Length: 378
Ligand SMILES: Nc1nc2c(c(=O)[nH]1)N[C@H]1C(S)=C(S)[C@@H](COP(=O)(O)O)O[C@H]1N2
Ligand SMILES: [Mo]
Image 1 (cartoon, rainbow, N blue to C red):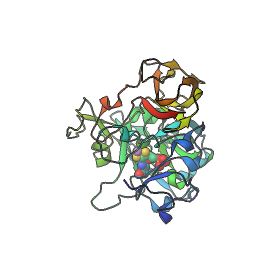
Image 2: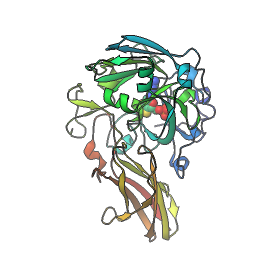
Image 3: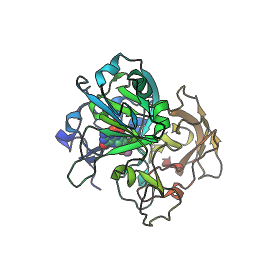
Image 4: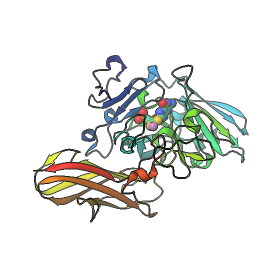
């Protein structure tokens, strides 16, 4: 693959984003955060947050806020009344809710799976950010909307269109219970009005779910019995319900697969960086870890002998269950080639497989394997 820099793509780049982001695709724009920009940040500053467009929205190619005046969001489906249109501007005057949370593309880690095509994400499709906005449930209440008990899914559509006539338009469905419990229509990111490139002026945010499900440029919400049959929801961004042998073909249907919804347990070593050379003796190892927010993390363990022995790391538990944990520890290393492995365990007893490819799936989603960082000790 040809490595592109932010300079190479000229006008397609978003001014104000960090020039060291790695361009994985110029159009639609996809850019990853290198480990060096991720390390040591509790909240990923907005200039460093990865960008993942499936569909570009040219007028939103900016880190600035976009006009909220006149932006409408349509709510339709099995509800009474059966359709309302809200003005995004009215959300500014309503009570705001804030989530510190991980934003992670479900394709993050794809490059770790053997032989899978698609955007070759390593670990650069993740950030820890603060979104704030108005709970969707409060919007429904304000407008006196009653959702029919038959409704099982809420499908969100963005305002931008497909990037070609042969392409399906992007939309995603979420379980209605989660949407009514936690989703917000986000207006702000990291304390500033939501930047255009990250979905401004309004984005549907549901903490604990993969980035894919966090619909930018929110235009419409449908309350329905069935989930979306759109290509990006019914074929892509899904994983088979039962294991698939690596390399095997798989025909996705709504019944034999599920959407990439909840974020998987993950931990990353951020320091030392992969392929770094460090001095012998005591080496500080640090990184981040997170899950879907359903349970706290019990431990993050580190191994420098390829899984023979593991030592605990130290961390503070963040206030928000959806935020990432910053962990660190010290290890003793002799000169030579080493690998640092990291593995998280949560209070639901979930852990990361030593070999992440046991979860192999045709599109390489939901990597949750132990992260292995090669280093040289001099
Ligand atoms: N409307 C819209 N929403 C979208 C997308 C998109 O292309 N269009 N990409 C999705 C994907 S795959 C991811 S991982 C996240 C990325 O969010 P970010 O670009 O703010 O980092 O947005 C999601 N929401
Ligand atoms: Mo994604």
